Image (cartoon, rainbow, N blue to C red; front, side, top):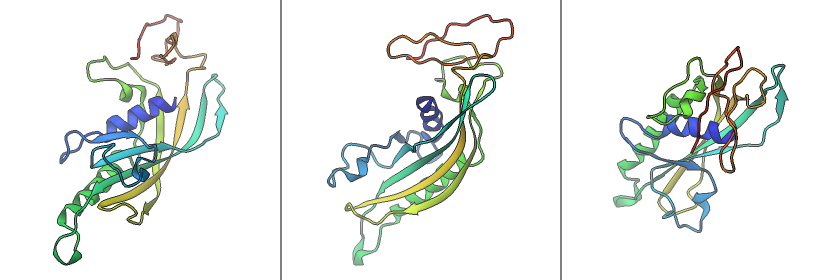
Length: 193
């Protein structure tokens, strides 16, 4: 379920008015790779899910208070007199973009679909009550890299075990995903790549 939550957040953050295609990926401490930030493009946004506890629901699904962090990384250069170049405003712009894209948003299973996939009717909720809990500004430990981290929390729902949800059969690298509540028990086939 974390993979679906990642995909929904990634889609929500991956474009903005200023940046039609932003680099958004899992956070794997890419910013700590011995000063080598050639492993990713900048500006970059990384998503990190923190450990969480799950609680069972009466319908067979589960919910969790799920904390996650959004790491924003941009480059900056010093101008004359060791003053940061105005490009630093890109960092502030991305901070605002992340906040506006996620604060108080509810994401459903439709938010994980690719543009060419048909949306579900009445899709189940995947994440809701997303709220920022704090912001951390990091010291500049790598030359010309600026990093900020937003900490969020939300309710994350896993309905794959739900008695009310239609399921997808999992094959090797595919996952089980409830795609629609169907009262009479009919099933739909749906493949996730």
